[in-house]
Figure (tube, rainbow, N blue to C red):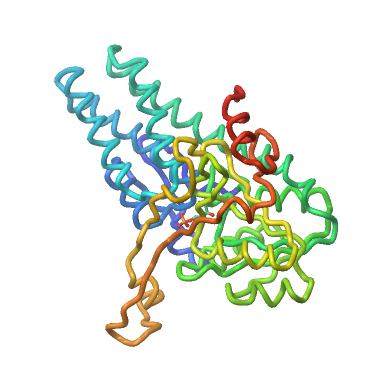
Length: 349
Ligand code: MRU
């Protein structure tokens, strides 16, 4: 199974998602600062994968703290700085903050023990976060494949696959599970301007697994819906508010409206680590603004006249009323989301 990030002794290794699909190359990070840079520059991306990467980053930080600290106060200062630095890498995906919080809570449990113990406990916690995420995606697939009828055309936006998670994927987890159940599905992959996660990454993953797909540009989605070629939409999420509003890759909102207009179910697939019940609605979600150069050029080649002013919000929020169901690792939640989401977070994992 494809994995975007793993630990190799003292190094965090990333599949370089900036170079896919042209080149399958790796990036090695030996300190938390370079892990933060890998997240910021999108060598690694996708909400759960960002969380896992930050957890590995904090493990690297603890190793460095153990080497450089005179005492436990020093160690704590080092960990706080590292957590702060990693938290500033990207603002929208809540999994980043969830993972940092979980690592710091584990650190608190053992903070007064000897340095070697702290480091090994944090290493195990980071590995657990990665392994649990992969497991959750298989559960999402198990719960979600029932929603996909045999013979369906299924549209997905961005990449919510193995590359965006601990493995298998959330939206692509549902799609993979439906395919594995021989449902004879055909995937429509939105290319996902401007970063092309659909064209570069989702298409690459589906090709590896021999799952039939057609790549379309984002502006073709309505056409194929009207043609009756799409029976379901499944997307991932970067943050889900208490009322079920969903932040996901820019363009998701438009797809949701199109799906509603055509009477097509619109599903969101995400693990509980993507829920942020501390915010009442999607209005409170910070939307990352990325460099406009990512809109006016591709791979260094200009796609607009020099000096063109462009905007680049990297995510949008889909209001809960457009969402047919949210598929989590703990089951499928139907509206009203407020109560359903509260109920599953209270359940023991
Ligand atoms: O900017 P990205 O590539 O990190 O955005 C990724 C998405 O929007 C995904 O759909 C989301 O993180 C879910 S990944 C399982």
